[in-house]
Image (cartoon, rainbow, N blue to C red):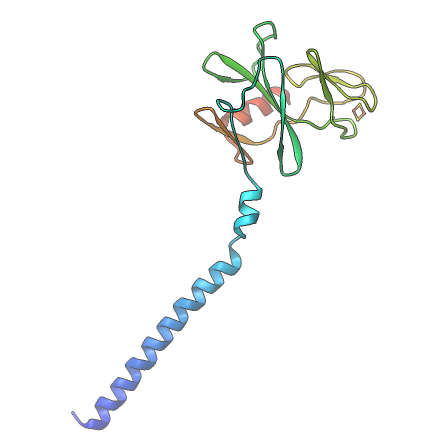
Length: 167
Ligand code: FES
């Protein structure tokens, strides 16, 4: 084998190695450009640990998910069980987007119903529209459940069942 051949082989292998490394870096760069930013990803999900929020039966709390209010109500024994309830152990919950289905005001909890101050609409403890102009129940956000932790933005079987019951 001549020196000329060895040199040519060496140059060819060097070029191939540089091209492979460059190609790999390009792929990593493209993937980073296509992937959503971490801030965008985390903005899409909100977790609520029902065991840690000190929720009192009959006293809903409001959380925020993607800029929308989310009502979380632990139902009392006196509140009628509903097929769309989220059942965890011996507790039943209502989860709903807290925007009136008439024109989007935020209803307020009064004793045992959500009342909308804008035009007098009412929703019962299941989120069903029971009075006034709202044309349909409160909307169910997509969520999944693991243990006592809800992940809003991640649609699971429980939110599908709640959505179907309110449809
Ligand atoms: S916006 Fe709620 S009743 Fe009209």
